[in-house]
Amino acid sequence: MTDTPAARAAQATPPNVARKIKGLSDRAIAWIFVGPTIFLLLAINIFPLIWTIRLSFTNFKANRINREPEWVGLRNYERILTDSDIWLNMQATAHFLFWTIFFQVLIGFTLAYLINKKFKGNDLWTTIIVLPMMLSPAVVGNFWKFLYQPQIGLFNYIVAFFTGKDPSSFEMLGSVDLAPWSIVIVDTWMWTPFVMLICLAGLRSIPDYIYEAAEVDRASKLRQFFTITIPMVLPFLMLAVLFRGIENFKMFDLVVQLTGGGPGSTTELTSINLKREAFEKWRTGYASAYAIILFVTVFGLASIYVKALNKVKER
Amino acid sequence: MSSFSVTEPSNRSKWFAGTLVILYALITMIPLAWIMLTGFKSPSDAISYPPKVVFEPTLEGYVNLFTTRTRQTQEYLDANPPETWYEEIVREYDMVIAGPSKFGERFLNSVIIGFGSTFLSIFLGTLAAYAFSRFKIPLADDLLFFILSTRMMPPIAVAIPIFLMYRQLGLSDTHLGMILLYTAVNISLAVWLLKGFIDEIPREYEEAALIDGYTRFQAFYKVVLPQAATGIASTAIFCLIFAWNEYAFAVLLTSGTAQTAPPFIPTIIGVGGLDWPAVAAGATIFLLPVMIFTILLRKHLLRGITFGAVRK
Image (cartoon, rainbow over all chains, first blue to last red; front, side, top):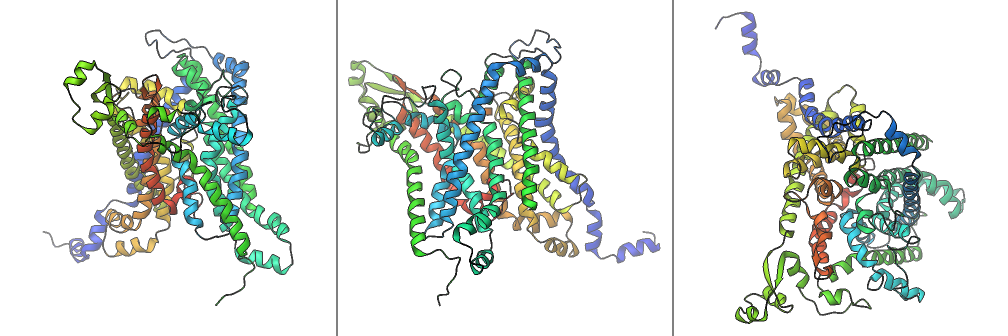
């Protein structure tokens, strides 16, 4: 070993520092750590998305691989946007979205408000209430189908018990009028706890001193509710609505199990319709264009909404 | 000492609130309780009118869930007396057990795919979350948003190209294919949640370790990982529950060897239509683990369902 000043300096370096230098630089570690995740998402999300965009301009059919697909330009998009049946599906989706969110916000907020009264055992009951939302939507849809059976179903029996109607006189899933509401009921049953939990976090984030100050100013309870409680919970509530909105726009499993989109197409939400086009009629190119339209719609609506949400937060 | 507080609700309003909440909780539990009860009914009790609350419990639903049965001639039945308690249940219908049903396999698939994808998402997610939390990454916010936005796609829309891709790669209806797919879906949740948990661990701990001569890797797995253990565990449970519950991809991309339980349970057919007690038994076995996990997870529930946006 040569006895240069550098070598002597290296020997003099305490072993711990030497070890640190031997390790990779922070920048390299950062990329090693993030890389696999980005790669996986590119491979299983972005690459397929680009593929979908490409397919959407063709008349490709996935059940006929040997047939060379033709380039059809924007024809798929044109056909979808002018198809009145698809507008009916959009309407069914809008009905489902609006009413599920309406009931979930109403009941969820009320429950959160009541739980925030901090009665004895509120933690236990909160946990019980939360259970439905963690369950498998497909299995939930399947067993609600059992509850909705016209003669033997528990739901019909209970409704009949309170209204005096004959339990076999109405079909929740089979009638054009009731089916859209049957899916709203199950979704509300399942997801109200979600809105409740977020509202509860909002209510608990309000510091006591604000109410104390209001009390000193002799603001009535009602006034406190509308000038303190509601505005302070609003950002939380809006966040809950965002999550429910995106989730229910994508809704598939629960409703497919309950009604399969029927009767006719009264509960055929866009996802169910998309599945039919893509995997039953095998119009892959057409369905790809449909998928892109849906994605752009969710993404666009969500972005506008997030801007509004941020404004409310800043206030 | 009792101090008067204007923000403490009065006893009367507490009592009122408590009553309403408990009432809601009880009503909301009826469907779940009903499905669990139905699992212990005989097929005729399950579809009786009016619905039976009191009935003679039987394990028929569970036996039917796990077995396939065939009808046999009286001579055969007389010649082969039942040997086990479950054989005896089946004999009441002049049937014999022909073999195990597919439920066990499907349930096992759910376990393999659930745990496989959870392990992978947590492994990749923890690394990425640590990097996002501790290092300066160019365009970090954009990358994080990109990771989140992959969740906005309707699963059916993603399923079209995945279906074509998997068909070409030979990943259709394989465990590996489903594990990779669920990992890709879960990783956004894992990164966002874990970043939140790791952000809460003071940097000073690692810095002290680095000064003591640890390398970054050592600091990461000897200091940060143990600190983040609770966060990692609850994130893992969320990933597991998602993979466990997933239906859309499972129904479109699997049909046999890798099919999970959710697409299978609704198809359990008995004599003359759906075998509701068997379906109910399957649902009970399938939902129970999730309920237990939910109770274990209750403190981190809010964080999990909002991707870490709301923390208590």
